[in-house]
Amino acid sequence: MVATLRSIADKALQAVRLLPVQPEIRILSGRCGLFSDVFMALNSIQKCEKYNLSGHIHWGRRSLYFDQRLAGNAYEYFFKTSGFSFSNNYVLKRIPFLYVPPGDDYPMPVGRNPRRHFKQLIDAFATPRGDVIRRVDNFRRTRLQAKSVVGIHVRRTDVLTNSEGRRAQPISNFVESAERWLTENNDGLIFLATDDSKVVMEFYARFGDRVRFQDATRSSDGTSIHGHYDAGIDVSAYKKGLEALTDALILSQCSFLIRCFSFLTNYSLCNNPDLKFLDLDKQNLGVVRTPWIHK
Image 1 (cartoon, rainbow, N blue to C red):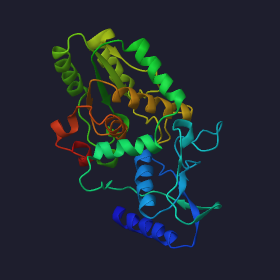
Image 2 (image 1 turned 90 degrees about the horizontal axis):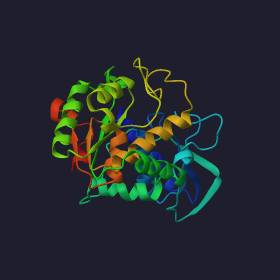
Image 3 (image 1 turned 30 degrees about the vertical axis):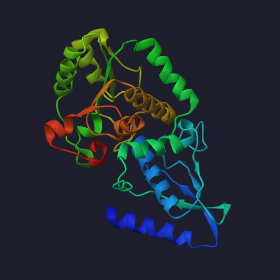
Image 4 (image 1 turned 180 degrees about the vertical axis):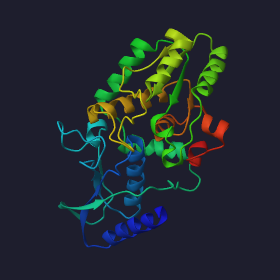
């Protein structure tokens, strides 16, 4: 089914390419999590470059992060630029070609390191806005004043429901990995990113003030934050997206990353292609959802 959707989407772009005067490609939200949407958009831009097309990413009401109070393009709430231009022909910006990106396997150019390849795409099309960067810098300056920081991402909610074939593992696996890292870095701190308040309590009970985290929206009963598979938590969509992006950027600046599968940490690892990491899904469950991130 996914392969069929990819084929249809690819043929649609090929057809637009053949027009003497082209409409502007408008890459819509896939109505999924923030970073799944980002990677799908970046992959779509690669296809547009292949077919010499121009346009922009536009996350309207389909997006889980579209905020009624802000309206406009939700992509631009978080990132500096949404536009791309590869056309050889004249582009009629008044006539958009709506393109919903399909799920994809994120093919890479031959011989390119995938994380470095996506770093170039992030720098060109998914660089955070200045106000987001200042938020990250302020947190690091005031809360993470240590030479070494291990970033830990513990995703629960949809993982606990086995959504999309996800498999949960106990929080103790993450705690034990953090303990081993701190044994080797006894002056270090932990930055914890999680969607579950119980994870915060468990880490704080074990590590006290050595664990730092955002004062962010979290679930206490398994309800998803962003509404991936249920109604989500009734908090500003912009706030939820901002908190997720802040977590991803702080994780990317840590000394080491301990993770389970998520596109949030895929963004972190691509934003810092030299960041070393431990994937507990791979180590403990033998599950590798995005093999390219390990190359």
